[in-house]
Image (cartoon, rainbow, N blue to C red; front, side):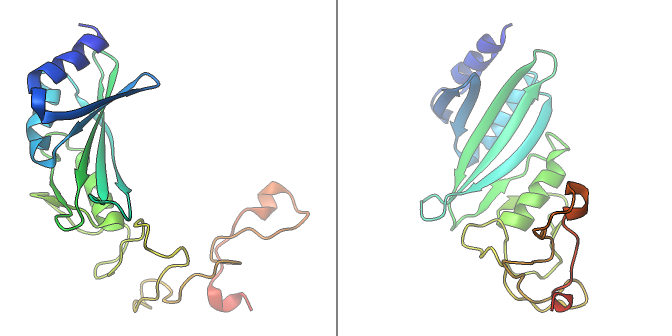
Length: 193
């Protein structure tokens, strides 16, 4: 079976459950509804040999409804075919079913999306923050999160002041030094004075 035949068979198998098909630069994206994710994911793995989950990412379409998209990048190692599944999630629901039992590598990807974007994954075995500390009330990858950050009350874990836009904690300084010597170095805000 060729890659094109494989992707066409997915469209035939699920018919109306495929809300859209996008072909761009040799890549295929199927748009699906969140409630159909697990059924389609299991079929992709078991029937169509998409045995490798490359990545899961999320997109914040701030100002639009639905606000979020969750994007699954699948790959068939046996047929060398790439497939993207994309689904929209409203801000009110802000949750999708987990696929960590279908592709175990989804575990960490889902945790990162939960931590940075605030999208929950129902039935995830260990959904907790992975990059930010427990109790951190914000989601830093949302478009309404300010670039300079927000003050928080966790002085034992991280500095609690908003990072300045110039001369921040990981910012290179203009100079005539070599590239190696201009590499950003960590600087605490109270030492910048």
